[in-house]
Image (cartoon, rainbow, N blue to C red; front, side):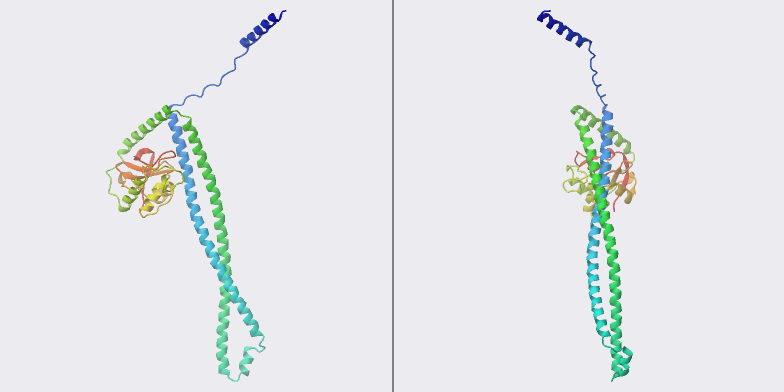
Length: 340
């Protein structure tokens, strides 16, 4: 067979193989999620991120208090050790005095009998008795100082262990927040401009409907207290600043960082986290809301805003946003509390 025929035969064989060979299966395209599904996914991630943030904030608050307690105990331990050293110095002097007194040879009764002036000897005996009592008190102080020093040392060690445990927990919670934020960023990055706009429209529609449903539960605004007015004014001055998880100002805040700082500037310190605010502050019905009250959201009390009046709140909404004025029903309302 000529070379030309061989080439033609090879070409025909390859073509036949290409026709007969099975076509590789292509991966099925991922089904396109609806706008409502995307909104649900985003809201779930936002909520999980805020839950992790509130847990981190609670631990950070406890850690700050624990560090303060450990520092206080460290100072107390230093004082106790100085007192113990002083007691040991007094005990050393006492031991030397006892040794020198014992080397005199005669006991107190023989000294009294042989004394040329018994009355003077009795007076001296009284002085010696007082010295003996002082020595006894010195021994008691030394014993008490040793016990106190040991107790403070044990307490200080426990405080330091607790501080280390809280620091470890805080690191794990920080990692959890960062992981949730990474999930959120990936989901947002996967959406196109049209999808983001559609999700935003759907969310606003939901908030508008929730606000209308809640309107019947809101009465006319009651007058705010002086502290409530100051808290609201502080919160309004923060509008436009970014949400940053774990932040308490002055350049950025998370949700409970904003509310706790607003009331601290109003003169009434309140708990750091939304859950502690819900747990410890006085609950008020929504019909009795007045500016300065705190509105708590979600069944787990993981979000909080400050009521500004007129059915509006000031809030640090979530990662990627800025502090703003929103309808009360911008999230599912759990209830309201009143500081002070």
